[in-house]
Amino acid sequence: MTNLERRFITARRAAITADFQKLNPRQQEGVLTTEGPLLLLAGAGSGKTTVLINRVANLLRYGRGSDCEDIPVPVDEDTVTFLEGYVTAPAAEREEQRPLMQYLCAVEPASPWEVLAITFTNKAANELKERLGRMLGEEQARDVWASTFHSACVRILRRDIDRIGFDRSFTIYDSDDSKRVIKDVLKELSLEEKSFPPREILSVISQAKDSMQSPEEFIHYWEGVNDWRRIRIGKVYALYSKKLREANALDFDDIILHTVRLLESCPDVLERYQRKFRYILIDEYQDTNHLQYLLVSLLAAIVVAMIVYFIACLLLRVKELGHVVVAIAERFHRRRPA
Image (cartoon, rainbow, N blue to C red; front, top):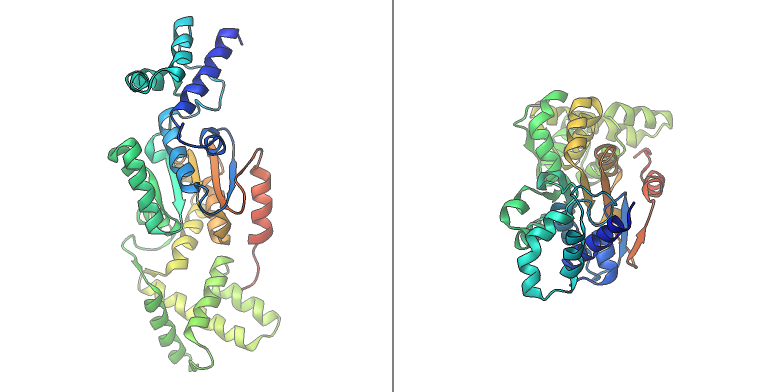
């Protein structure tokens, strides 16, 4: 690499950094690191959402430009001098020069629909879109996949759930709907609600689904340890699943469970989404359950960069994280009987 090219790479990163000058140095580091997996550990009020939003903006504007040595544009002394001067130019002058700067600094910028940003609440997802809209414009922000796990999975299932035997017009049951079905099942099986409270039954079924245990597998396991009560819960689970299938309905756990099963059983569907999402960002990663971990693992298999946002006590960048994330997730999310 020539000295001129080295100057260009240094000036390019400095110019991109100037676009995020309102952030502190550690926040800038999280925003500008684009090569490989990244983990952020951060306490409440440290600006995690701000980092996430600015990171999306960086990926859409500059792609890999802030963190790679690729030079996709012709470089000469005038180009390098322009970028070096951009950083120290007055704000009004920088605003006029920004279009040219962005052209020179961009390296494979992501399209909005290539970014999947997962949050745990609809409120957080809407806030992310609103703030992105103010930074990038409503059109770009609208096309970013910013949603909860369940909302993202519903979009996937509406297109391809027929591949695993459901109709695309499936109904989503809320907790009250699920409780009503459980009560009907208990009556059919002559089981008393006092002995088998519907809320407890649904909790056990949810744990089984998180472990990807079918009703048959659940019953087989508890028959092996001769647990009379769990065996009967397994029979409730089996009839509950049958009734949902007959109604072409999914409960909340099914939404992610069937998405994972769809991706595992249909390689072409899996590859479509693996290639679609170049960048995956997850807020509150430590709150993911086993199914959510499996979903992300499937989608991230050939993703250019996986970004995980993890809430803890410190703001910290960890390099070469891929094997660490997998090890931690496998330790805490490995399959186990419900």
